[in-house]
Image (cartoon, rainbow, N blue to C red):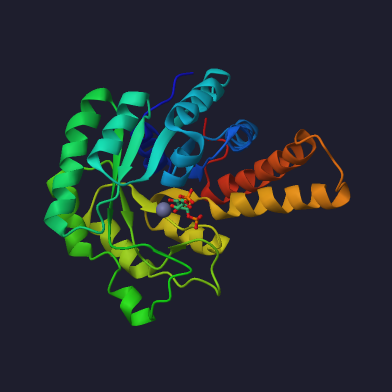
Length: 284
Ligand code: G3H
Ligand code: 13P
Ligand code: ZN
């Protein structure tokens, strides 16, 4: 079936009180693994492409591969731009066939962030393309930041309420203690803040940096209003572990498919595990 707008998937998730996984893709094997997992779990799914993915694979390949995958299945799939950096890039993704775009204006002052999201919405919404905004700063796990400093970057609930009212955005990414990449220790999430934000807004909430967050914490975040959960690092870990094992077992191997096929199988498993935690399995 054709790609669907992300908003459709998140509205259904709100009704069913579960979250949809948004999995980062970089090549054909990753896209195939994400879609195979969704088919096996009978789960809706979001395939997303970061700046790095677009640079690596190219926007046309990302759209082409995901459209082919969608055309071969009855699973509802949204294709989403992850951490879009500019108005121009978001528009380019809309024009190329993405069904959702994130425009990450979190580094700008509030009013500039609102203005950027509004401009993107003005182009995206008439095309039926969903828009995700971000408020608060989600750091990388490698960033050396003191806890007090980190907390000052968390999403302010009153600001979130104002941001959603002013933009009418379809999904809101918030900062409550998660970070991109591998965590050094166990991440501590400000779940109380999440509940306050959820109580003040009526928008689906997005959790970034979700790899490495314990399953129970993810479940609790979903119970408190998270409807989209972003996963990249956990997929990379499984891909690389399986590829390394295949190479170690057969160092002289000349056929890349002998490395990529087990990597793809390993990715299917982790995506399935995540879908079960998110409660999106058997929702079709
Ligand atoms: O948003 C975070 C993703 O993990 C992006 O990473 O730009 O290296 O693909 P990447
Ligand atoms: P992780 O790589 O930490 O899972 O984060 C993914 C993400 O938030 C993509 O936007
Ligand atoms: Zn992110």
